[in-house]
Amino acid sequence: MGILAWILIGLIAGAIAKALMPGKDPGGIIITMLIGIAGGLLGGWLGKVIFGVDSIDGFFDLSTWIAAIVGSLILLVVYRLVTGNRHSRV
Image 1 (cartoon, rainbow, N blue to C red):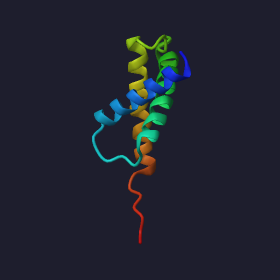
Image 2: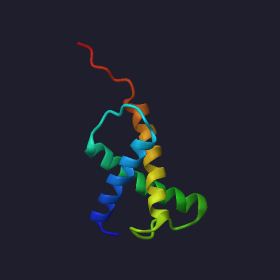
Image 3: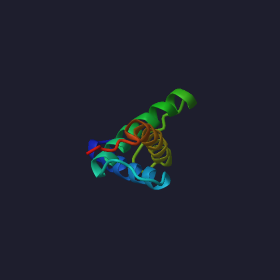
């Protein structure tokens, strides 16, 4: 897949991950897209390591979207834990 397809999948997978995990997230559309892109890569890698399948086949394959969304959810949890309750003190 091309880089534009990864960006599109990342944007959509990151948005779906945010919708599935309600709550306030520190970050906007750029962070969502980066989490989605990295989540797609993480999901594809985990699918290959754990299940021995090539889960990143093409743009319209269901396994590609599931891998990207699951990876995005994992990274969103980690992102929330890292940036969690940072409040600026004035």
